[in-house]
Amino acid sequence: MSNAHLCRPASRTSLSRTILVLLLSLPLSARAAQVWVTSSSEKVRPSASARVLSPAALSSAKNEFEAFQVAVTANAGAISDATVTATALTGPQTIPAPRLFREAIITLANPSSNDGATGDFPDAMVPDVDDVVGEKRNAFPFDVPANQTRVVWVEIHVPADAQPGVYQGSVTVSANGSALATVPVTLTVWDFALPSTSSLKSHFAVYYSDLPARHDGVSGDALSTLRARYAQLGLDHRISMGGVDDGNGDLDHFAQFYGPLIDGTAPTQLEGAKLTSVQFMGSRSTSSYATWASFFKARGWFDRLFDYTCDEPPATCAWSDIPARNALMKAADPGFRSLVTTSSSEATANGVLSSIDILTPVVNFLDGKAAGDLGGWDDQYSGLQTAEYAGFLGAGPQKELWMYQSCMSHGCGGTSDYFNGWPSYMIDTASVRSRAMEWLSFAWGVTGELYWETTWAYGFGDPWTDQWQFSGNGDGNILYPGTPAKIGGQTQIPVASLRLKMLREGMEDFEYLKLLSHAGDPALAHELATTLFPNAWTEPSIADLLAARERIANRIVELTGGSAPALAPDAGAGSGSESGAGSGSSSGTGTGSAGDTSAAQQSAASGTGCSTGAGEVFAGVGLLAALAMRRRRR
Image (cartoon, rainbow, N blue to C red; front, top):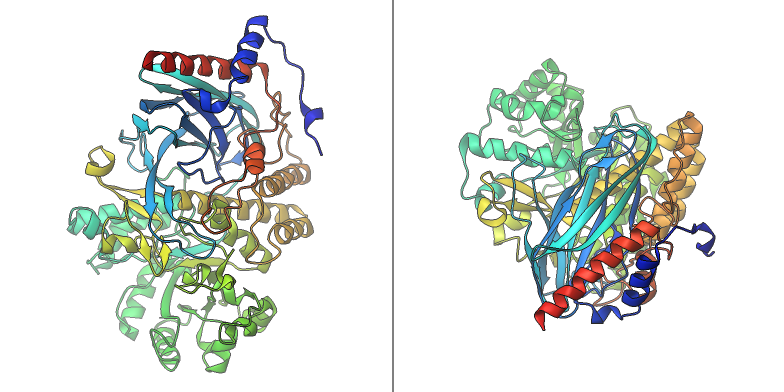
């Protein structure tokens, strides 16, 4: 269906029309610099070609993060000293200016899987002003090598008390002191809010030795402060990093440094955000379990405490260890919960199912392909397995089904096509796959997500240059060490990856689905989730995902009686939550091309062909500046 009927005629001056006719008649490759906009869910590699600039149009719930990307392509000679600035968004009230991040490049020597890739990829989010302690960092200025593209992430947090309606602002890209382009930004705020604390529980681990290894040997209270900052950034990305081992086992110390993260009083952007899980870190003894249980109950934290009883048995413990460990824990407090990463069938076959409270299978074992060439287990778990967990979940209110992804999402070094397409946090997979787990969690009734590590690469070299672990690029690593030497400023902080941003998008997608279900249309929520992700290894297009989100938002507003803000001029010219910012597909599949887009997909992602008069004038001004730069270089 064409979007042409959505375009509205706009008043244009004769001058602006002439400028655009002349400038847009030039091939993109003939312009010295081109600024363009695309969706947050497209992974734009440095080799990406320039596209025509279109305005950025987004929609968002209240208390949600929404983002788009501004790309700068150097077509004829390198660009130096590029900077980006953004204005506040004005409308029914004022929304603070977006945060800006330069997407740093990492070079991959090996593909993570058959559908992975090698070469340069964007991943680390170097902040302009960081979102942890608020210091100015060295995102800008930056250079763009000739015939390459560099990208800036533009991130808006809509306040929880924002008035619904349409907001407008702009983002300006400059180089060498001259403006290249000003991008108009339109944000439509829906009349419903997301909770600050994620409804989908999670446990994302950080190992004790990781942070000192890459943060200048930090120790003592300084390490505890830094570890709390990691968990703070996690909460602002709607995940819980509640396995705290900083070398000090005193529980009063724990409460001092990490209590605010559990109570919801930490300095997060999401006001009141709380950890949804806290891992027991004491010794395996009834007395230690009892001490932790008593301490946590006294503070109202016990509902989030769990024991990681065994990981992937029998690899890290014997099957017989699980009942014994569980008995010690239950003797201390029957409400203490155990977590084991295994499947229902394996736990049943080994007689340990009743000793597990949080059963956590790998995603491949909840909905498997029938590949027929992997030793039989692939056929054992072929098809959706959720019905196999009904008996376990019916055994009591303490029982929960979580899931996790492992190196099986990229093969663990295997070369079978079985490992293509799964939800993945690898650098060389398409961004949509990093927000898939949460859609599947909603569709399957999963209530939590576990990820084994977030800083694993810290112990093996510089994560800024190499994250090759377990035959994957980024396995166990979705953060970067933000040292002053690397990102500027004075204070050590964690730095998010593009993959962590996508994970947060998935967590927010889950909230949309849950809100729709609770508002009175669970059938539509389930239909949209299962249509978008009919199985665990299908990657939907960006356009389809954004269209589903917009349909959910409209239905929530309809069911809750909220006000539906009228769209700004041409803001409805696409489909989804980032319509003007690009709503095309970016599958990123196919050997050697992960994260890239085809020519047809690029056309879709760059906009719909509709442009406001203002957008065209801004584009013309930017192109004039680009031509002026090219003349100066002659």
